[in-house]
Length: 84
Image (cartoon, rainbow, N blue to C red; front, side):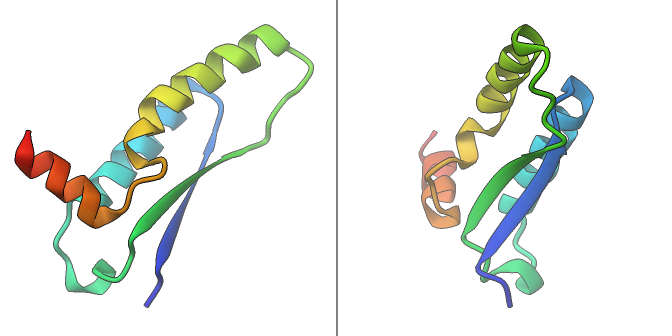
């Protein structure tokens, strides 16, 4: 079984929100099939470097949406959720 999950997304609001929601649903599931996965790695695809202002705005949105998954394990996330 896998230890890590890679979530690929493009830099547009709908795709960022959908990928983040899928990662959140996955991390909070109790399915035995995915119980060995401990970390989520959000990876942007098709990055357009020509429009720097739009790119930076999209990066800010992605950072905000994926912040709960950066540098935190599934067990740590559950502990935070249960404590809150």
